[in-house]
Each structure stands twice: as C-alpha cells, then as structure tokens.
Length: 116
Length: 239
Image: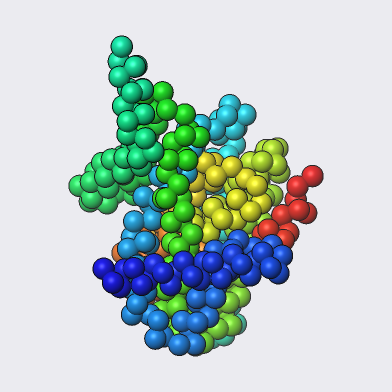
C-alpha cells in the first residue's frame, strides 16, 4: 500500500512537472507526455526510483482499459455526420495499418541487408 | 412511475452513479474476457461499452453527465501515461546495440503509419475533424488521447479507431511477416509495437518476452515521437 501511494505520488509529481514545463515554455506537446519523457530520462540515468514505481505503474497499466471505458462509451454518442462515414473510416484504418506493417517490414529487411 | 423512482435514485446516489456504471460494466467485460481465454475480439471494452450505453439509454442518462461523473477515471489517464516510462526504461538498454537500424526503422515506420492515415483520409474525402481524430490511431491509447485532445479531434472516435487498428494489426501481422520473410522475432515485436500499440505488444509477449520487449520499445518511442511531431505539423494537412 505504501509503495502504491509512493508510486502514484511520483507519477503525479512528474505529470505536474511536465504540465508546468509545457505551460511555462509554451510547448506544443501534451503535458503528461513531457512528464513521461522526464521520468524516462531520470530512470535511465538512475534506477533508484524504480522499486517505488513498480507497483503503481504495473497496476495502472494492467487496468488501463478501465480508464478508457468513459472515452470509449463516447463513441456511441458520435453524431450522424461521423456514423455515415463509418465504412470509409474503417477502410482508412485497415489500409493504413496493413500498409504501415508492410512498409516497416521492408525497411527492416533493407536495413539489415545493408548491415549483414 | 418507474421514471420517477429512477430519477430519485440518481439524485440520492449523486455523482457515484456514473462510476458505479463504469465499474460494473468493466467488471462484466473483464470477467467475460478472462472466461473466453482472452480472445482479442472479446476485449473488456467491447463488452463493457455497449452494456453501459444500453443502460444509459434505459435510465435516460446523457453522456455529458456520465463523463463528468467519471472525472476520477479520466484524470487517472494522466498518471497512467507517465507510468509508461517504467516498462520503457527497462527496455532502453536494448537500444545501444542496435541503435542505428532500430531508430531508423522506428522513425520511418512511425512517420509512415501517421502519414498514410492522413493521406488516406484525404483520398476518401473525409472531413478535417475525422482526420484530427484518426491521426494518432497507431499510438498507444493514453498518448493518442492526449495528442487528440491537443489537436482538437473527437476522443470517442479516436478510442474506436485505436481499438480497430490494434485488432487489424494483430490479425494481419502473422501472414504479413510470412509474406515479407521477416522471421526475427525482435523485429516482429518492433513492427507490432509501432503499428498496433498495446494490443500488438500484448500479442508480442505471447510469442516471447524478447518479442514483447521490442514491442514495448517500439510502442513507447513511437508514442513520444508522434506526440512531438504531430501537433507541430498537423496544420499542414488541415485546409
């Protein structure tokens, strides 16, 4: 329990640092993402915070689908101007995913061919 | 008569009513998902959200009140995004050995995933609001959500788009790896992480922990790169 609370506290402190930096420096990236980058830098340089973070971070990530329930429920309340375009939207999603995987596979083959 | 009773009950239970709805729906979804042997198409969200929607229709609860009542869960997405740094930092030591091919594949793959989405949206003649909602769909959902809030898309549409992308990604990946002859599971993991985010990463961990490690790396770094590049450059695509 102590570790869970300590971990949550560390995460919130870094989120706040990220949000404050984005506001102060007028950056065009999400605040919590800058918080994540800052924590990543700290953890890469020094692992002493890691044991305190493991419980809170693994629990949050494990149940992240729960946090997405309200947002995803919002999909049922999209207006007709979106719902009418659903077939095209699905086509975009499927095509771009397949194309991106194919492209990445080709890039990796080319890069490794050059290295071997 | 029933309506008055329901209204009374909503008043009595105040703001905990929407959270109760979310937790109950999720518990049913989580239980079904685990009972089914974790079938991707029975993801907890696929079961929970239609149930919650139907209940909201029956008890006449509008989305704005429901969403406001779930403020705590929405807020927790912030710390959850920061928490992604923990598994990512544990995989960063993989980076130096393969730095050049890994960073190139990541950067080009991530850019291609986003760019192809934007161009396809244009090709199909879809509106700008749809483009802003789909732009981050191959990024892991907490980061994608913060990007879409930043650039002004519809979060509900994004939530569905990321889920569809992840599912398509894991369904297609196996035959695509065979067709292109990509056999090394480290690189398979990277492709899954970049193109199919957390759903792809979970699939990669089913292959091996090495495959999963590379997927974690691909998902995390692609999320960071997209969050830095997309809000700054999306203006070029909006008319």
